[in-house]
Image (cartoon, rainbow, N blue to C red):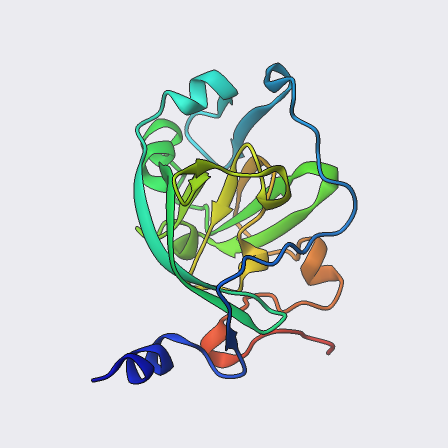
Length: 194
């Protein structure tokens, strides 16, 4: 199999490969010069709620992740290297209750996005703090960004502040504004105007 065949098997329908990392967001980029103002709260249907300051979060075990990412606006970026905290490191501290079936990610400026719990818990999903060996830039979600590489990239919420475990699925900000509830790039689940 040559390089172009391999690339074709890694790029969902309707996507074009880019080596740049486009910046797309709504509103202003949060200013975190004072990281004492940042925290991450995990709550909802969990055995024990958790809250981490930036310093506490950065003390959690981290590892390297490699993946391809696919944006709903039709670009794909291959072979990305990140550093972050595996979802399992949080789950062992908060322990979701059996009735938890979904997760709502809460980000700055009131942005939210929904995920089925099984997608959040995949071993490929993580909370990123570095990209390409460097801390995330503010435009790409500093200090912490969720990364769910098997779904369209809007599900990888930038400027993450909260993770809420719920029994029922409900649309987040982007889903209320026309984006698909799930967002599988291989099925081109971009928008849902029904």
